Image (cartoon, rainbow, N blue to C red):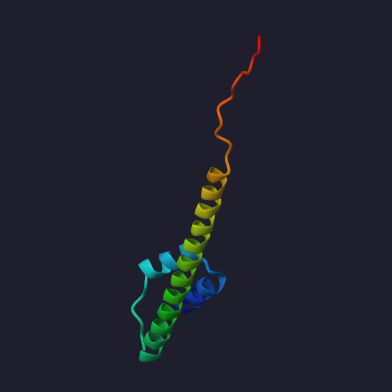
Length: 84
């Protein structure tokens, strides 16, 4: 049951469920289950790393956009030009 839930969480990219399943990992009854769990852990690690990379890329894009907006912002102070 645990392995099926773990597979489902990987497929759905449900990181909260992955965390919960990792925290309550059962003792496996056979070598085949252990091997399957190791394979799934590897896949989860790859998924998390790719999501981390994507998040960092998105954050860099946001930073670049903010920097651009700040650079193009009109900072001239208002002046009154009155001729008498």
